[in-house]
Amino acid sequence: MRLRLRRGTTRTLLVLALLSAACAPRPASQKIIVAAAADLNFAMPEIARQFRAVDPAVELQIAYGSSGNFFAQIGNRAPFDVFLSADVEYPRKLAAAGAGAGNSVFTYAMGRLVVWVRAASRLDPATALRQPSVKHVAIANPQHAPYGRAAQAALRSLGLYQSVEVKLVLGENVAQALQFVESGAADAGIVALSLALAPPLRGRGRYWEVPLDAYPRMEQGGIILNDSKAARNFRAFLLSAGGRRILKQYGFFVPGE
Image (cartoon, rainbow, N blue to C red; front, side, top):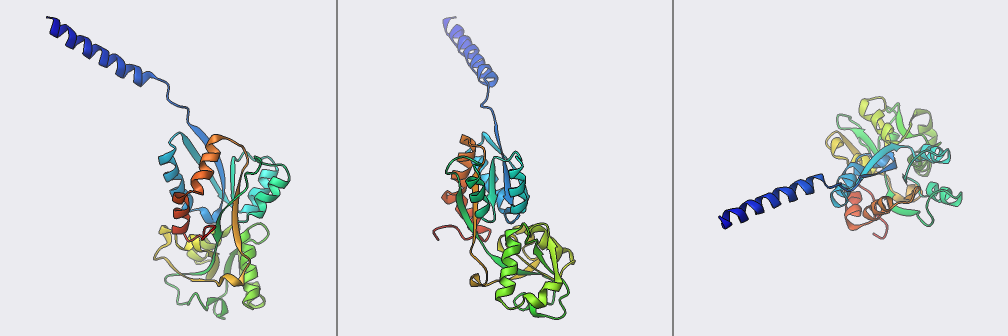
């Protein structure tokens, strides 16, 4: 009788413990809103997935667009927590204007340019910009997109700007410039290597890397706008070996390599 009583008591205590654990309040999920340059369109989902694996209490909400447009929106108090720009000068200007947490500007990658054509195109991407048959060349709008400004600089450096200027089709950002080529609205585009290497585009196009000395160094940087432990943890992951590995996988140079 005593043995049965002990076993029954043990079962009761176990059930109570499980119920208590199930009813215990879980740590509140934290959300940080990230404004990300369009060239991160494919790398960021993988970064977010792996970050969530190591910090499951933090949820990332990511918006993609041109860095210049985000810069203007942040100046008008858009509610972003972290800004990842294709040009580190935008975060530096925000910091100089008093935006963001102190000393929170950081460099996370170096961007690279490629000329991209559809897989079905007869064009050689290395010579496409010189071909008279090319009627439209897509680039990001240089007014607010760092990749557009870099593309302009590359065309000038390669001695092609005068002949290509009338053919230019401007995308709102570098991702849209690539979409123009993919859809057939443009014959070729000068876009980010990170987009050309993205898994959804493998086999759908061919590219030629624009020589690095043909355009200014594309130092990509970020800033924490609303300081929090979650935002700092995200920055730490992005700059960690795991974050750098993902960036390299998607065609970025990383600082120090």
